[in-house]
Figure 1 (cartoon, rainbow, N blue to C red):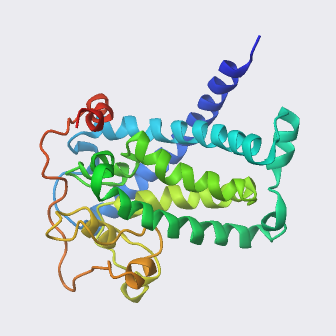
Figure 2 (cartoon, rainbow, N blue to C red):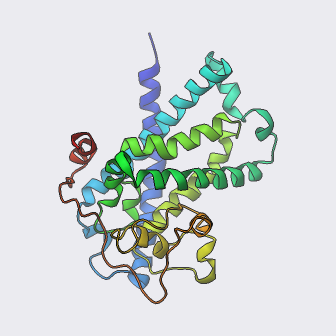
Length: 275
């Protein structure tokens, strides 16, 4: 009898167990920081509109991403490298493979961060146009932008974005061990750039994405919703002409003009398929 259902349940349980203490720490940290350095005045994050929706995404997305990342890596090894045996798969991915796996782990981590951010920059721009926008609009539908809004992503957006990029780089040979370094950073930084903070980091605003940088991306299209596509390194926006951070001015309104997007997670997951 297949043990796959039990393995999936165990994977889900392990992911949730790791996520809960991280969530508590982030909630306390950003509660304190936004008390002193809020970008936009108003209610605290725990009283935001659609909080239940964002909490559902916050716990659903990591489980979904991890299950599909592992599944697609297995498919990649099978189709591209003809590796099918379970023990061979584990050995194949345990420490990476090929020339990339021979680099020091810190160098693999840097390569992963830079390469993934470059690819995600262009994929992000793709999701702002044509038939892809209806999936990405879910992420932009949050009117009260807070740290917990970071996980509001439609599964199609995740599959064609973060998950696909991760799988490409890991199948290319980068060791999954670097996720022990990269994973905590990306989780914290994603929450950080969505937090209600007025931090722009001065001259370092070109080196690392900040809350002010990303809040301009979440404004209306007229204000800046088609700028600041980089997730981590704003240099991509500088190089390709999409950087915007006006001096002495902060964004004020967020969300999308489409009022038909439901407020609950079930309706949001179905929304793109009704368009």
